[in-house]
Length: 156
Image (tube, rainbow, N blue to C red; front, side):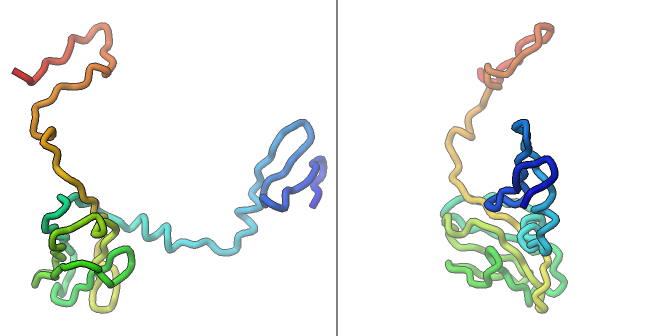
């Protein structure tokens, strides 16, 4: 395809037009030529309303806060209703993951009896470091203005 004043449209990269003078014009051809947009993945990533952190190897409880009838809550991990490790759903609709490992990380969602989404939570797991219990000072790499005084240390 040839455009007025331009050399060609790249068949390998729709929307890329090469023009004389070394200018590259990126058009909206790709955007306009796409008749359907996959919104499912955008909706899924935007639905994650909460991030919860837990400790590896411990029991982790995820809450389904807005469930009306909590006895019929269904939990899913990354859109699958199959949870591949030991767990239980409490009488108030919360999900308890027993001795959670790395495989338990991901996007959890609780659904009502019609399968409608109630809430989503992203679970991240890690280990507590003994260093997190030590007092700390701000790193010396923080820039200080010439007018400011040094920050006091909280170490004895």
